[in-house]
Amino acid sequence: MQIQTDVVVVGAGQAGLAMSYHLKGSGIPHIVVEKQEAPGGSWPSYYDSLTLFSPARHSSLPGYPFPGGGKRYPRRDDVVQYLRDYARKFGLPIQVRSEVERIEFGTDRHLVCLRNGPPISAGAIVVASGGFNAPYVPDVAGTAKFCGEILHSASYRNTEPFHGKRVVVVGAANSAVQIAYELSAVADVTLATRERIRFAPQRILGLDFHDWLKWSRLERSSWLSDQSTPVLDDGRYRAAIRTGALRRRQMFKEISKDSVIWPDGECQRVDSIIYATGYRFNAPFLEGTPALDDNGHIHQHHGASSSVAGLFYLGIPLQRNFASATLRGVGNDASAILPVIQQHIQQMA
Image 1: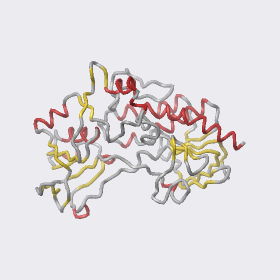
Image 2: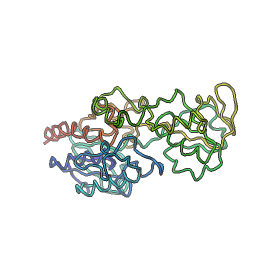
Image 3: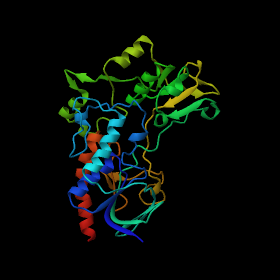
Image 4: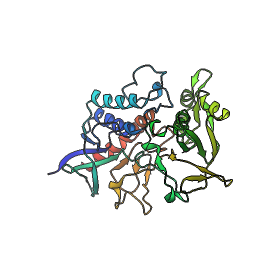
């Protein structure tokens, strides 16, 4: 038996919730399928101390300001609670414990096949789950020889397992610096980066960095990317590097059984390597379909698939601009793609 609806949204993270909000407000029947036990996307799996780099006033989904004061910087658990409250507040049609196994694309309608439930037939599908669920780890010579621990920041939770250890954190963005800084209080830490770390003050003339992004409209451009965004600092990070409390070195060139080998040939013994090197788009249920090219990449323009009619994406970094993959940006992208979805559904009727 099939379930019939107009739109299926895959994923109940920030992007899926924003899309559902706009679909419901427009009266479009839809179902949000989420493989986890509750809404929240990747947020519950991030490290314990994660703190947003933008204040609450720049960290909201449409229709519901982030509670607790606009100037504060929410932490991971605050965001998880906010997303779950958001889903309840608007009564969004979320079907949890519903993992997509595959999608069968048809001429007029598409079939979303679940691992543990009846398939759902829909005129349009919005993939809102692929932006942050495939951790990227670079291929470094000698990795297979290493007898210590190698993990991605997606698996890092807190400092407890690393007390007294020798740790190398790889990455030059906000998460890498934040993790390395907190580990430096309990471990011997080196921060390895390919390029110099570009810092920017968290506040400039009394305003948060993100206030300036909004005022200058840079957040609605593609000029910035995850890689070009500076590390926002209230002074503590630069001070830690300047005083040697946190060492920064050029990215190592090789890994041995118990060490990393730096560009100058020095061999440094380490116990753990933590890669804070971002994520790649990943939607395994699209494999083998026209949605992906021969290299496994999607074709899309501003969220609409270029290869499959009725297939859309939301929450992809730089989908439309710098803010596209952020709490404050997915709502605007969902609003922009809504008329295209409506037009597609009307054409099918």
